[in-house]
Length: 259
Ligand code: NAD
Image 1 (cartoon, rainbow, N blue to C red):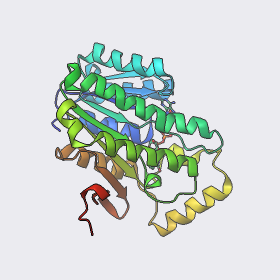
Image 2: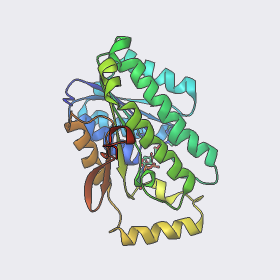
Image 3: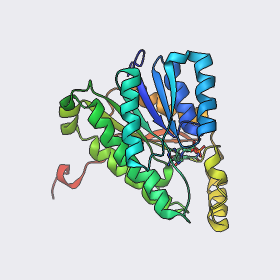
């Protein structure tokens, strides 16, 4: 996707992977709205980006993605502020098996809503210009993982992405929908004090077996791949220390040879 002069909205962009993705999008010439509940970190990130890329290319919007009105209002603000919308990155997420309903709300319900809003504002049938949605899933959505509710939300995001990314929809909306599935990456999410000790220990074991932690720029390379590959729709890209690979190209029962 050619991003120069385009407009992007990134949720959970105050820090971590969302911030890394937002910066990569700015580097490619787009304007970016950063949405987050963390006002101080969000304002600080926006101020840094304004210095580096220009004050007219970045704005922070205080928004809890689980609050329907706030998320809808934020999409409208982005369109009012920048005059359009071309790219949505549904990135905000938490890892919390104790407050598991909240985990489902942030990681899955809000991503469904973010996709619906992306289609509402970018879909050609609604007067938009088409565009791209990238949903932040995880390897936890592809493989067994010690945090079952978190894994459920991330598997849900994979299913949502594949199904919204069916080509018959593309003909109508001209909005592609893809997902990124990173492995463990050094960010604040891994330090959540509410991750139970046994889950934490299992994660540490998996990490050691899997080659260790990635850094934010490793995941941003995955985002860049999805931004570059314009033929991808409904694609699910795994990003790990071992490299990147697309998942789920196997055909369903309806496309298999019978007998
Ligand atoms: P992070 O905690 O550094 O960043 C998450 C951001 O989301 C924070 O800025 C936080 O304030 C924001 N946020 C949380 N709840 C929100 C809400 N209700 N509304 C708006 N913003 C909210 O963690 P991260 O690792 O950068 O996580 C980003 C995404 O990447 C998440 O979806 C996470 O599940 C996913 N992910 C992370 C890893 C990893 O190992 N770090 C691996 C795979 C996937």
